[in-house]
Length: 376
Ligand code: SIN
Ligand code: CO
Image (cartoon, rainbow, N blue to C red; front, top):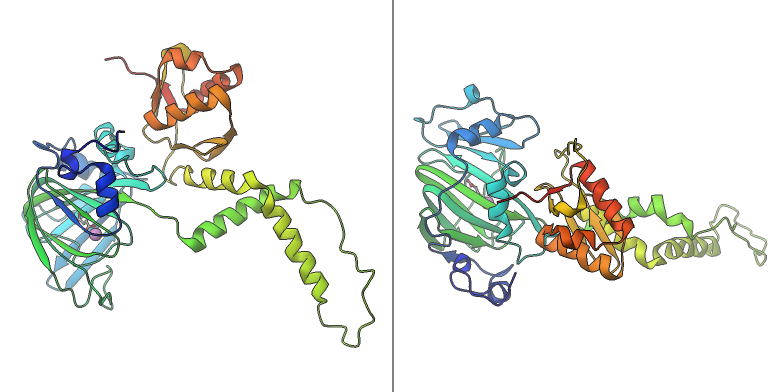
């Protein structure tokens, strides 16, 4: 993507300008971000998706007795009638299930794939919403159908209402208010408080991001390292020829603690290990993703396009795909990085890969991770 080209999607800003001025910093309202936007998923398709096993969905009802929430799968008959006001259902990860939604998400790839998460779609009846709240991650809220009134504000007091099944701000104070029409879009940085209320039936697409959390990342990397790290760390036993006689035998010798620290440092020093763990972690498919093995053997000359559910990234020395890492260099690295960035490569390019890399592609095709390029 050309990061210096002004985009209608960003209200005439270039991706570089948007990232510098707004990303993680301040909201941006874009009227007509996608002129003439017509959602490729309608109400009944969304209802069907919310009813599926393995699709994350929620039903939220703002009733006279307070907020109610139910996790999916949501059977169609369990939804309130669409004539009833003030309810909404939300379906997570629609990009995994729908090519058109996946294609829309590609427009936001001026942000690294490592940060892009999914497209959530909500459908609300008049007055419906999820209440005033804040999210931990950045979000683009694209109005897809009908109208929604957004009230937003930097909120110092982030205390939540107690005893409610949702995270709802106790003392929400809006600073700005806008009604969004189809094709309009609102970007909000993390922790920016917002409340979106449907005006008539309304569909909103949230292009959401993820950010690794310190504790979770440390746990994941260290678990991975625990499996892999011991190649370079040998069988040497702790030795203490200088150990003096001790009057207090229960005290752990400081030199034993030093030994422990050295062992861990040695395991962590393998420069590539941490990077490959990180790439494998970032490309791990979501829990609900299952690939079906391909029935036909894919021919390299057909070119390749990644399955919409495939996560593929790279660093200086590796290619990562769906939780696996491969060391690559030279021409193979250039071509496979292109496949990761463009999500497709021509047959000509695929054929110029080394025999090993071509074999890897054939394996990935067999796993259902990539396909022959669709004609037309
Ligand atoms: C919604 O679509 O109703 C909620 C989106 C959000 O506030 O993050
Ligand atoms: Co939100």
